[in-house]
Length: 483
Image: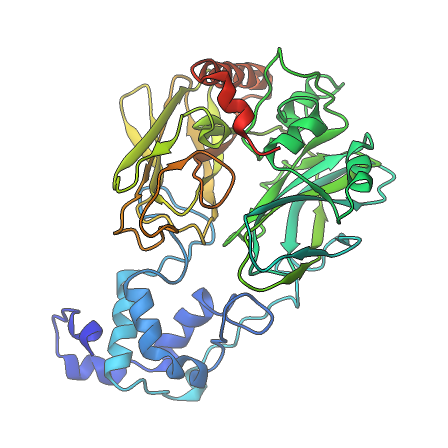
């Protein structure tokens, strides 16, 4: 096979090929990196749990792992390690190619490691609270993208702290992403009742209406309360402007979100989202019709914190508002369109995660941190962006970034015929917007202040950056957002 032949082996190929078997060398690779998704009931199209499963598709597997299409881990290797990395080493890819060339032998079943054990249905175990949309929503076979907000009563009598949320869409093929919010002032229920269909329509504009202005960092709510530990971050990237809207932090806030390719991950110890008593869960969901009518009724598993919540955290998104203020306007045929942003940290922080977002024209994503010493560290590099795999990457350990560190993001887009993911043939002009065929883009760093007392200064600094980004943009563009 060409794939295996391309691999240079410095010792006798015959002796090496004879030694590689499924039971001893290949099964550990597959079980550790593939089986979690490639098993019954999960999103992958076929199972990889047995020798027969893997041998049946051995050559295909060899090709997709050699090209690093699989396992789906888009972050490039660097000097910063992530939790739960699914990136295969060169040696592992080499072994798989040898096994294929040797005829994919099974080997001695006595050497086979035990099949991984998974909790049925929920990857983090049984949730503390499971809720489902009260009624299903029909996604038509054709038409433009749909932004719909679903109100799910929670019935909580006391405030709770949320460590993780597992989102399980019924119509997985048409759900692109869902952002999670809480709301307790009744406006969402009113909007739901007024709309004849399940839920109510709207994207960013609808969330702004619920908030009374741009959604704010839930951490800001903490500043109005008695203790400093009552607020996590806002995962949607929109931050408050002091002169727009009146904040009501206790009645509306974010709880994170889900996108294609994402897996639920608990927040680090001591961190959680605050969920006030009496709140409804709002699922702000983006649908992309697939050519087949689908019925969506998402189920959500919520995991509550058991440990004391001691620190607040926030999101630093560059560019702000998913690039809404960057005047994204990509000409047809443009193969290298770039947007960039930077932000100097006003205080020392500890970063614990990073993620990125763009649509089909996204080509590459980077975020770097230039320390006051002049050293530059790559926090995230995705050289081959894929709209279908939007992972939230958690650092293996907290990353300390001193005051004055400059964060820089760089996002490139490819609107040429050479982009196999380009939804338009021939390419057309593409501007900022929420539709999948529009574009947006941002890299988001999750941080805590190095000292809790510094959090107000950090939030003020980022608010000012948000404000300056807005002021450099014609105001009419703000109102081009989908309402």
